[in-house]
Image (spheres, rainbow, N blue to C red):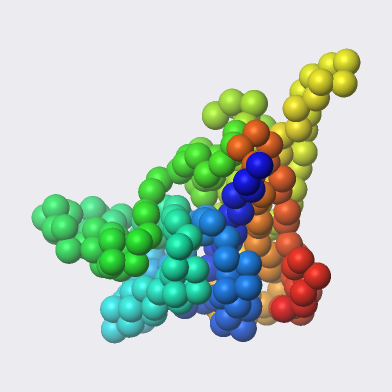
Length: 254
């Protein structure tokens, strides 16, 4: 039975990503040729239009187009690395910042097709789909960014319960948003007929030093990513943690 493989890229928040880790993930894609690549959301940060930049020098930084071009180039790297893979960019709360800014301060521009994410980043040419979660990405498995369900949960169990209440208990859920990776499992059944399910946070590859709002670079974040193997009946998740920007995958060190 054929097995579909999916690489789940965590929060990147371009341009505050770790470039070395990103280059290693591009190499991983070249080596593994996954069938699908899913970016879990917050691909780009859009700091210029963040509410946190309002009234600061960052609001006037002439870097918005540079950041858009940079993230588009990043997507192109992954496309070049895996020409046949399906690619999905899930909508995250940071990805929404430009739309929110226009809605608040320039609503008349909201109908411009040029400002749609698909057109700003040339997603049709790259073969990248942009969608709002939850999106089914495999057998019994759905991807969300994490902000869709509202509020913020402080523990892995609380996130798991939030998704179960909102979307149902008989599915697997993969998300990002918090930069705190975990893989939490649960199972249902009796007399040996047990169905395993999981909730997985794929973390981030954001450089904490680049996050200037974290004054000393000390954060409870771990660089990581997810990998899925799906035979059409069952799903096998793998959460890959990094140490000092290094990781092992399929017997190879990156």
